[in-house]
Length: 157
Length: 157
Image (tube, rainbow over all chains, first blue to last red):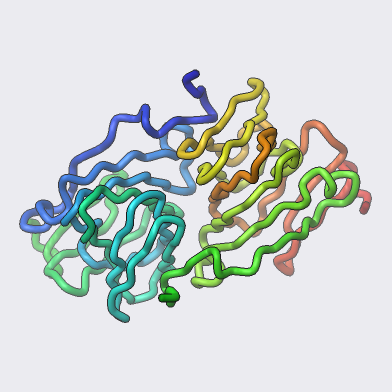
């Protein structure tokens, strides 16, 4: 039987398969499916995405957030976590956490031959931004609730 | 190979098997194992527990939070979600969300014959409290970072 609010079956949510990244970064993360679980249930203080990453793809460029804690929990398959300390394989049932403001860029890469699925969990801060140590990219939230990706010097893509 | 920070294998964390509840509520939730995933990784803005609930046990008394959003995601087994709208079975891979301040009490009950495991996700607000519509119990955080359970009129247990 179909679940009704406040319960939710993520399999019934249409995935978001787009990315705000400019090229050449967009092609490194797509195809990628994100399902926002908190939004349809009215949550505003936390963000929880269930994300499916195709083989060969990256969750994001390596980055860290200014004002949002982030935790990823692998639900299915496996991904490689890349940080300043190198690489580690995260199997299903394991996790990783990144405190707001900690300048240790992270990303997940699916080097396996099947899709990987993980939860991305964070608080929500309207003044959040992100830094990307490896590429000429910067991210910030805009006053209207949108997101903006620019070059590091602020020029638009 | 053992994971190192910022990664974490929850299976390597010692579980917390206690409850701050007074009796007769404590016996309704224990045995129950909670593993805090964000704390050992330095997260302070979100709380993420991986909780294992034994057959016949309740996650909590039915409650709602004043200032913290909450989302539960079932990782293994199944639980029954109880809210004002009645009961629904949450299988592995499904979730439920409870906005801060929404006066719809919720709890999970394990009516199956095997342990259930789920993630409990929330923002962290030092002024949070909880109300319990079915029982004479109230919860609030204290200025020193602790938690206090009292009767609804404030008397200590």
